[in-house]
Length: 330
Image (cartoon, rainbow, N blue to C red; front, side):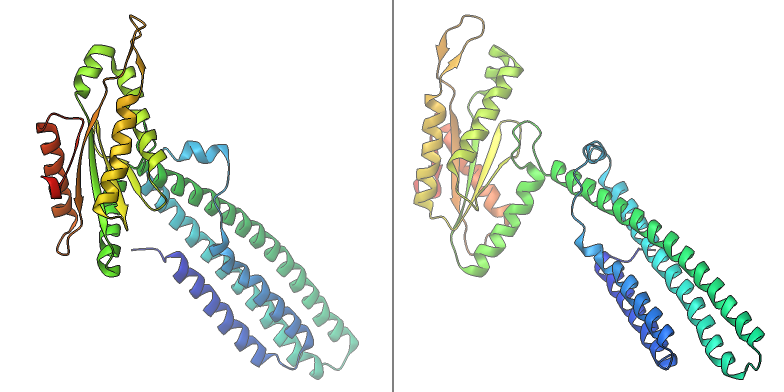
């Protein structure tokens, strides 16, 4: 059985409060005390709508919990929301009991002939009011605790989702992030009738780099290449690491010639970068990358566009590396 989603839970709370409040108003319209209490009940009930105002909590515990399974956190979040719904329901039931006591007193007082009976009824009302205050106070505290717990869980869930979409070494988007963004950008470009290009890049002879200089040095190369991508792309473009030494750039609203120009800037910057041999202390600058570029076609989808970009990248490798191949020049 699935729990209510946040919007449907809020709607259910609002409708429930509105129905109970309106019914109580109709039944107790002649009683100022009842009207005051019902109005207060409706105001307190609308605290439930504050669920949509939660913001991620900045806590040390949130960072630790972000490493847990996101599905487990989602289940905890749904359970906590269900707890809030139960607390609000308990609040309404307690309010209903007090409202019933007021209604009974309103009906009984005019028929009472002696002051003693009036005092007895008033005493019962005072007792009911005190009990109602205690219950309302307990429910409010529990509701606030649950609200804070939901905020923490939601913050942890957001953090876990962000971690799941990022490459841990370069902080670029990972393959999952790339796939999601590629599908979204293709759909938007086809709807808007705008151009879009996809760039695939691969660091040349990366296995030799690791073998000759060690994996820590290889990681430095990957990080530097990722920094070049981020430094040169504009807002709206997406850079991702989709394999070991393979990267991709999604360029929405970009012409093929502009994509080639941007990619060549990145290629030349990597080629010119000076590196130091940790063993000999000598500088060298022969780390390069190859690129393949394609432009989105009218009938393209994620699979066809990616396959064509891979073909262009393969052609760049076969052509001697440290170059760019696009469809118009293949």
